[in-house]
Length: 345
Image (cartoon, rainbow, N blue to C red; front, side, top):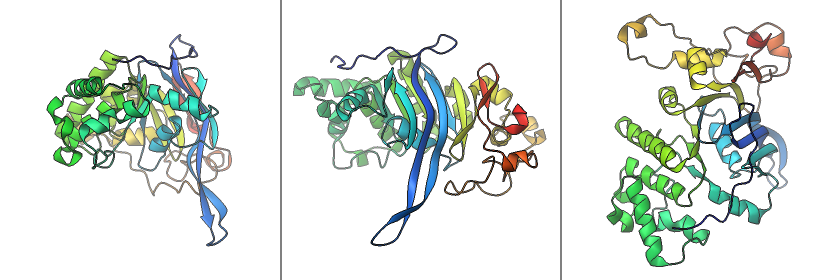
């Protein structure tokens, strides 16, 4: 229906020869804390994303998991430059996004899109479905002919499992699952290569979640998409993701293939998360041991000295875990990275 105006640049290669579509290095996003009524001054910062590095390979689904407030959504939005990073580098299809001039970044946005978490809040209630889905096409001036535009929007609705006759209806007339499908159609409108799915199923009924996940997998196979899949449902992450990155208090503490992380979790936080995942077998469920972490997640405005996890860690080492800087992310086995003094020492 239309031609892409932005051809992807040559992307860097990983050690294994896989094409890296997104390369994130030392990414930080701090939100200032201010005080004062007339003359506001910064008195601190919320370290929502604190020195995060990872690669996303072309055609894969990288899962980003962790507790609420750990920085998952902020990471996704910062990668797409919806939030301007405080520090760090984001290279997408060979181009550094953090220093890209606004006109060039606007063109690159056609290659990367986002599916938002809340389908009830992410759609404009005053716009019809046709206008919502076609808005990216109008903004980027891709299709001028109104007949062609309507035909293309109807094709998108069919592709995500909606009736094309819904084109003139409004968001309040749809269920949560249908609204999320509208959001997916909007994300696909410009034919992107990379999509950040920010907890796209967390606001949906369990019966609808599987349908949306299956749709995302079908679209990935058909359109050769790459996903950064943000979630806290670890059982769903295992089903859809090729690799998993575990976040805690703004940092990635473990990164590896889905099989490695789920079968052999090395970081104590990952072990605790996986111990809470329900097991379908009642016998195994009754006999397995749960790992209960004491206390609450510290404030990202005042992270603890030493390792961020030391206030809740059941295997922390006196001295090194409380005094040494936060452990770096190191490769323990090929493709399996961990940030833990207990594992790396």
